[in-house]
Image 1 (cartoon, rainbow, N blue to C red):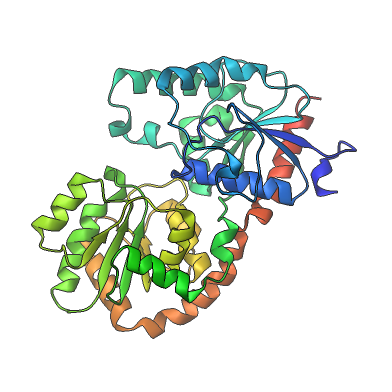
Image 2 (image 1 turned 60 degrees about the horizontal axis):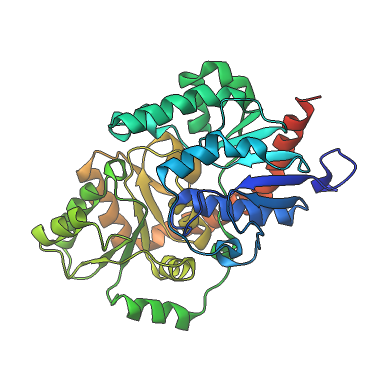
Length: 379
């Protein structure tokens, strides 16, 4: 059986779910998909780090109740002290984010490295607490039995920044939740569009964060130039409603009627928004993977994204890549895509077939191999 891992019985994995609060971040989305996939390939999975630890892979948020994000003190206490006492009746502890105690654990451990943003970009380690935290991460990672980079681009960052760890790193791409692979009822889409007042076509969609590296202001300025030459179309910025910088820029450029900002939305609503979109745009300057473009490929939405290593890897030949700093290039790519949508049809159809590699069942099967390596390394 796939889930036996050479043990003669079902392999049991403990997954650290301590960081989960509302499953709005990429890491939380990853944890939910990972647990879903591990169950599908026959592994036993238990959650550790939450008061309620029973995980239900087919329910939103794995059946865990909503809660406030843990305090910094509690986060540190768990990641560097309490997790050392993880139950010993499991075969592997999987820490699905960049953390590990500064000690070898009683059972094999696997750490997922989503990106090395804090080590690559100085703006993400401005204060003393952040610098101390990531110095601790650097000291702790060698104690993990195996490391998983979610892209070759992230693996290359690992090799460059932590060359001594290169032999422990496996590359397994991120997965896309099965909800994105399903057909969506037209009435459900219409309800979501009415809820957020979305009426114009073609509809451009952005999903992601709004920190500096995401480069959303460039996208907004580019879309202003596009909209100056056409009377139709709208840009939807998901999750930007509470971002004052973005909302002020939209107002300053006179785009209030053409750029819609929404609050954070549920996955159910997000899938509907993807299915309503004519074009997905993603101008990020740095990514460890790029989950939203992968989601767009799965749904069958044409993608324009930044020409950076991780996104080249995710999108391959099934999207349009533009330099993240070339505003004119973004204007041109958006205009051409809106003016001649038929030219993207073949790319979209083939892109959906390619995107099947992002199903969590396929991704989880690759984790079985990594768990085996971690176990064998202890023998």
